[in-house]
Image: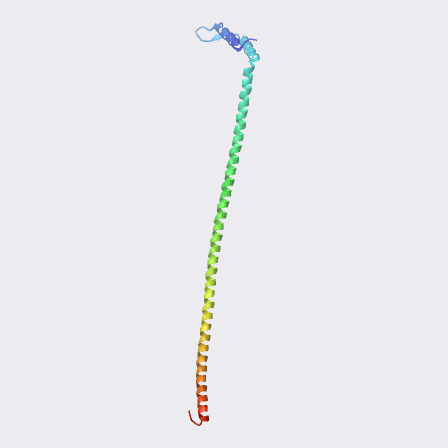
Length: 168
């Protein structure tokens, strides 16, 4: 088995020994002989070259597979990012709604407290007025009773005086 370099040397010899065309760089070669050398080269290519070709083909396949996988990963990452963004937006909206509900609840509680205080003040004012009215009535009745007792005491005193015959 001859080496690849030997076949290349044969091609060079064939070209060097070929007839030149007058007034030109062209030569006349034995076409069949060149094809024979090329065929021998192909048949005797070292395994390393064939392995290198297979490695290159496999390398190209790996690169193509990697491109497909990386495109898939990028697409999945984009989808995940969109979902996370969407989840974040949902969380943000929920937080805002919760804050609004809390504010509304606080306003209602404050309004209820104010209304309760107003109602209690109104009831206390009515009670205060009722007690004042009762106190005035009691004071008035007390004055009537004091006057009545004073008159009764005078009548009793005068009656006693008459019993004694006008003597004191």
